[in-house]
Length: 108
Image (cartoon, rainbow, N blue to C red; front, side, top):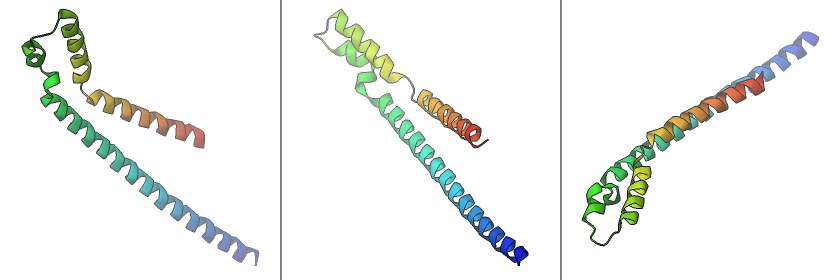
């Protein structure tokens, strides 16, 4: 009788474990899809920056009515826009790995 109760309890725990594994696999898949979506958006933004006239030296040089201060600030602005967004994706992957480490520490 006690053995049967333990078997039933064991079956319940095993079925809960299977459900947790499925939920975890779905969460990992969802996270991977989200990361891929973000990377695609980053690539798209990078490609837009590459063709943006405000990112071109020709753009500020051909404007006739700009003083040097405006030209300098435009150049600074262009350089900050032109930084590759891959730096962002590196930061993103670092933060997700830090989150994974934090979860592992929390579970331990």
